[in-house]
Each structure stands twice: as C-alpha cells, then as structure tokens.
Length: 424
Ligand code: 5AD
Ligand code: SF4
Image (cartoon, rainbow, N blue to C red; front, side, top):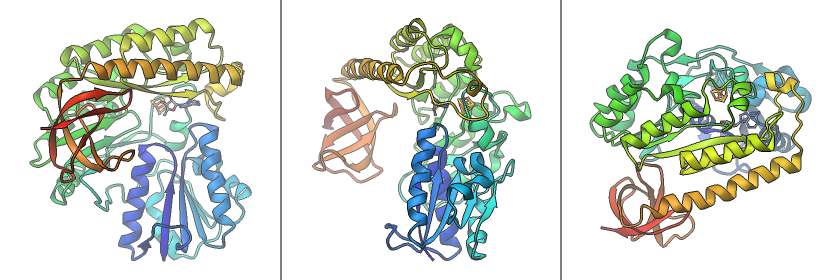
C-alpha cells in the first residue's frame, strides 16, 4: 500500500514513527509524501497536554472522513483505550506506544476496529531505521518510572525498560556503517538507563562504549534529570569530546514548595548545583529546560522564584508549558486554580525573559569559533547554510558545504535563537 505517517509530540514519537516507516517499507509498502496520494494514513499521537491530544485526534478525525485506511498510534491511544473508537468511529486500527511493531501485521489483516494497547510490551522493531541523513535518534530507554504528579507519560508509556548495551551498540555501529555521524540517544529520563536493574552509572558507561565507535562524530542524549548528573557523567564528558556539550534538563519550577508537590525529587539548590557542576566543567556548556506555569496553587511568589531560578541557571533556551490537568494523574485531583489569562501572562513573561537571556548568552560567543556539522541550506535564508554546534546552537554562514561535513565558523553576530558567522 501507499502510506504516509503524520507525527505529533516529542522526539520519542518522532523516533517511533521512523521505526514504523522502516518496518512498513520492509513489509513491501511504499512511503509517499502526500496524504492525497496515500491509501493508508497513520497518525502518531501525543497526550502530554490536552491541546496536544486534540490536535492529533482532530487530524485523525479529518483523515477518517476521506475513505482511506486509517490508523492511530502513540500516547493518546493508550489514554483513550477502547473509547478511541467512540471518538473516531471510522478508525481502522489503534496501537499504543509500545505496540507499534505490530502495525505491518495489523495492516495485512485488513483491519476494522483493531486495538492493541501494548501495555508493558517490549516493542518489536525499536531498532528499525531508514537512514536518511547523517543524524538519527536511537531509543535506549522506554517508559518512565518517575511519578511526577502532573505527568501522564508513565501511565501511557509504561514501566522503564533499558535496551541491552550490546543491542544499542550493534544498532549504532550499523547506522555509522550507513553514513550516520551523529546520534541522539532517547529516553524519557535517559540518565535512568539501567536504574531499574540496579546498575549504577550505567548511562555514562553506555556512552563510553559508544564513544569507541570509529566514525561516530557526535553523541547527544535527552532528557536529563539533575540526579543523573553524577561525577561519573562529568568524567565521561571530560574524556570524550564527541559527547555534545548540551543538556536538556527540565526544571519545571523554581519554587521548592511546588517542586515538592510535583514530586520532582530535587530542590532548587540541588538543581542549581547540577547546573554549576556542568558549567564548572565547561563554561560554554549549553543548558535548556522545560517549565510548567500555572501548576495548581502556584502563587505570584512561586512564579517569581521560577523567574529568578531561570536567570541564575542562565538557560540557553527554554520551553514553557501552561499547566494542563491530565486524567488519572495525582495533580488532576487538585483544583486547576490559576486562571487561563494568568497562565498566559506568566508564559509571556518567561518568553520575554528568555529572549533577552538567550541574546545575552549568545552575544558572549561573538568572536569565538564554533565547530559545526553542516545540515543544509538555512530555512529562513536559503542563500545561507546552517548547522549546529556541540551546544545544539543553530549557526549559519555564507556558502554551501557538504551536508554532514565539519565546518569551523567564527561568530560575528548573535541573535536569541541563532548565531551568524564566517566559515574559516
Ligand atoms: N501540563 C503542562 N505541561 C506538562 N508537561 C508534562 N505534563 C504536563 C502537564 N500536565 C511538560 C513538562 C515536560 C514537557 C515535556 O511537558 O514541562 O517536561
Ligand atoms: Fe517522567 Fe517526570 Fe519526565 Fe513525566 S516529567 S516524563 S514523569 S520524568
């Protein structure tokens, strides 16, 4: 069949979609770019906030009216369960986030109303790839055993499962043989790799193992938790320059009271100590974060603590989310008592702060030389070329370079989200 896949949500979903595409191609189906041309359309859904779920389900609803075969995968399926067919009566099949490996078999059965939730299944086909460029995601840890009060992820993605080191290493070696130079290792809380099995520092050791692979130029990973920022992790950073100097370290709030309510298992001081450790190792180390504004009971004073923490941490970038109660989570039992307009205001304040801080941090890099892997023409200005430095900062310069090649760029101009320079 001619099929296409539309993806909503996080990197985990992007990776799962890639695996499904590779599995479908291996089963003899043909991937097409446009929905019009497709005989089968699959939507990979997110449910982390209600708005995210509505977008994916809305898209599927429209596609269900076109008479094509339709399938919904991902987190919203697990949350909705059987009710998914009440919301989308014409949907042909639905698979949860750990059951995507079953899609080729389901498609072959000419499905109507097929549901596979997957629960704590170890997904088949997690390692399937259709190598497209020099960068790719690799799943190392699925599920989440943290129980943050607001988060639906553990309910929908299930218990943690760390893939065996040998399996990950073999996958990365094969990717490198096919031209991959940069991998991003994925886990909901990736530094917890091996934790369920009681292994200490299993993640830094996995990194070391991957650093021995010839031709692998960069390793990234996401997302991190301050508890995982151990001395062993720093030692591995120090030893291997191919490990990128960037960490996405969601903090969520700067107020100890709110952090405790959220069940984040660190205080403001502990979080800032992790940041200090990384910046002591490398002052240019890039740190990005996620923030939730308008958590139940968040006062103006709590919010101001978040503002000041963001300034103290000197985040290079941040993603701000308005609190959205998710059914079944602990915080959904609390009144969602911060008004919509107030959430919006707090969001805007943090956005403006970040814009100024991002600019300031980038300005400090003017005159430095960034090592960049060329990704292709810049989206905003196709006359320019773009790539990323080790800190995941977007760098653009004049003049084409082969995609995937290393370019040294001297920075001449800084913006909040982008660095401009001359290739040398
Ligand atoms: N409401 C708002 N934001 C949320 N996030 C997770 N759950 C919720 C929720 N219920 C945010 C967190 C997380 C990011 C992926 O989404 O900031 O880090
Ligand atoms: Fe897991 Fe907590 Fe991240 Fe949610 S916020 S995905 S529970 S670590």
